Length: 293
Image (tube, rainbow, N blue to C red; front, top):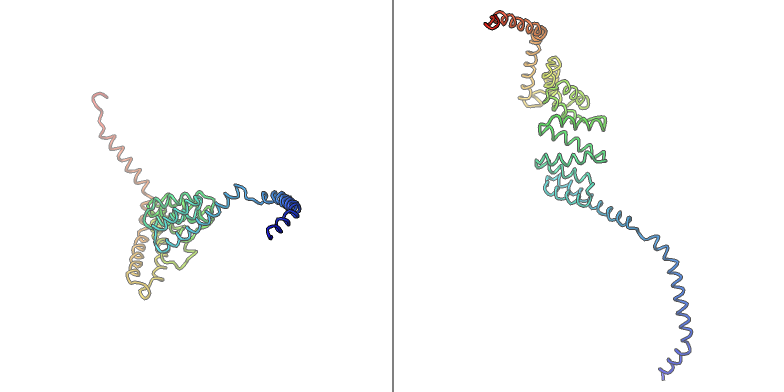
């Protein structure tokens, strides 16, 4: 009985249901057609997808660099190198990953590998990274006794930033001294002392530079300043004695300077006289040979 009632209801409403389904389908189609252009417009392009992936890789690379830096701070150099390599695989242009790896290489004594990374950074577009690279190369080249390259790196740093820290002035001064350019070294150290006038180490190095340049008065003045600053009551006695000994030597050199100046002034004349005597002696003892007669 119930089945018969259901069948009767379906037969009576079939036409209405069929018409309602058609209308619903038509409405859905119109809504879809209207929404399709908007969905297409909002869909990311291949370039946008690529950029999104790159941004994600760069973000992860930056995170790895931060971890590598932390490892460098706690002297876990091997792990720092591994993390930096992973960061570079994700973002080969990450200059800070190169710097982190170079710092780790430097810490374990692989100076040449460190220099290679610093060189890559030095040609990048990141000026902040440049500063770190040139400063580190200047120090490493000095340690490797490649003084010309040390000076060149520090000169580039100065050209970019129009100034140097007292540490960089001191590093370049030591390279100049190793090259025998004592006047240039003294000039660099004077600039450094102007920045940090209480640094006794700079006075010691400048006194040595003045001594190398045979500017004994200036060397003596620096040693006198050191004697005034370095006293046995606040520093080890051997440091005070060392400064006193250096001052004695400098005073002796200063006393000998007039003699040296006289010798320097007459040395060309002495050389000329010796050369003339040699020529005369050669002329006197050069007898004519049989062939010449």
